[in-house]
Image (tube, rainbow, N blue to C red; front, side, top):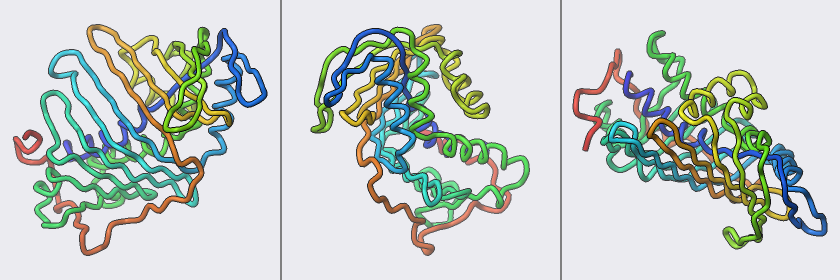
Length: 284
């Protein structure tokens, strides 16, 4: 389970990392209303509170030597009602010189994760394309890693990530651009991580501080439409020779989505008393 829990966390971490921030100079025209840049980002954070579903195309790149370099690229469908659910397809997963062959797909429904990957299928040996993992099925020592992954997924929501932007002291409007066929206003600025996370709930604050621990200040770009909805967000930062960039294109706000468990005959479980996969299974 030592490698399995991080594999599940990896899928959710790509989503958790999607964030943005605000406060500063410049004005932007949104409909017939002209807002200061800081006010516009605050309005975007408030509007995000009304979003219950969306789709995001995600890209995360990291550099800093072989051990700290990698890339995650994929797509996520998210809903918060009637229950929290996400459907994540990761086409590219590569870190520290290791790749997940064929990528992965992860579906989260409540306290249960369904994961599909060639690596995981080889590890379980069930002959099933999907593996079901529920915290209730794990031993105490294994449960911590899986619960951490689930907690990360639960903590990620659009309002929480956009709240980070409101800590910026230098945000400004830099122009208008079309994103995915929608006219948007482009805002750019930076935010100090230590201050930005104070706007979040305690558990989420601790996680973000850990995820962004190598960057004291993060640069962001936000593209918001006439309804203040964030259509695109990018983050970048560097510290101690390592750097990262993250980007999310957001669509389908509040549109109906269907996220369901895979067919039962395609789902297997973890082997009884499963430990770490055999050496070498984490590499191509």
